[in-house]
Amino acid sequence: MESKNTLVIVVLVVLIVIAGVQAYELISLKNDLNENGVKYSSSSVSSKSSTNNNALPSNVQNLPQMVGGC
Figure 1 (cartoon, rainbow, N blue to C red):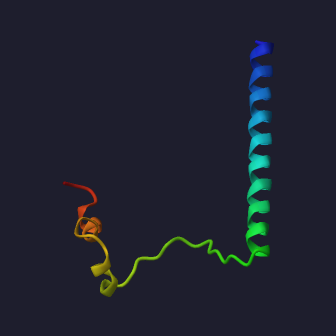
Figure 2: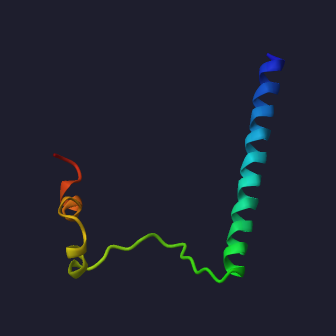
């Protein structure tokens, strides 16, 4: 039983370390983008007005109506 608890703790520590490394890499990437003058937005992509729907292929224009059924 003791070895099972130790294994769970080791796996948890490894996952925390991996999350920390990924957070560091994200911050580093964000800083590199800022230094190079690349603008980014943290918001999600907003839907376009109906006037821009003509630029979309016909099979993509009606996606909101297709959600939830065939």
